[in-house]
Image 1 (cartoon, helix red, strand yellow):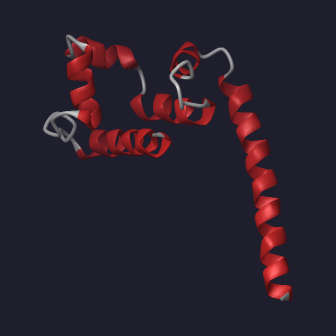
Image 2 (cartoon, one colour; image 1 turned 60 degrees about the vertical axis):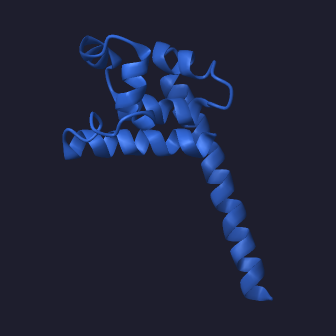
Length: 105
């Protein structure tokens, strides 16, 4: 019984740490136009939006290669995987961003 109580206290402490971390992340990205725009999407909070911005990077570099939102969605992994897998580094970032969106949904 003592072990269970110890683990419950540890979970409570970690939960409090997460609240503080979420608050710090939110304060850091305050005023970022990309994050502010993403949080207007239902189900996307500051943490998910920040993760997306971190994973995608500068969206302008993608828009130069893509002519429509459909092709951007394809690169993001919601369409053809061929474009997303051009390089290992890029595909790892896309997969991380996609995983965040899937978890949000």
